[in-house]
Length: 131
Image (cartoon, rainbow, N blue to C red; front, top):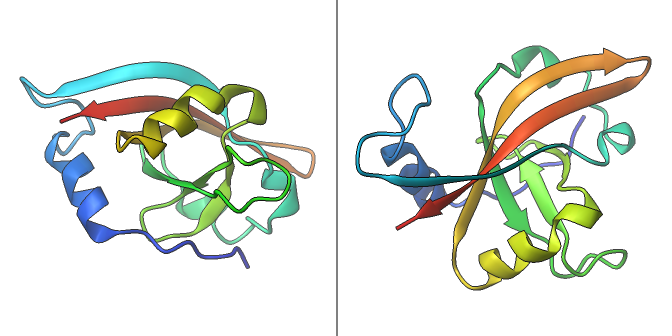
């Protein structure tokens, strides 16, 4: 079973307002594509029950984990219902962590999932929601 992360429902509402039902940006909304990456740390979580529920273009919520002893700039990646999937890779999180610390909304969308032996590889795209 995966660990749960507390997700602020208002954050999901802000992100969802900017997307249509197909997950595409609504007109005149500032969705800024930042980068494509994978979710790190999936091998340390039991995602067998979560994986079948993950669909392409699922919204992924990011949350800073400032008390992480290994990485002070850690960013947790979770599903909308708070199921922890892993982290933004350490070498890609410094700028995003600082943006989040400054109040910017960073989120992701699942692009592709595949099992590579016992590793669930989750490819994602990361976006900035400019208010």
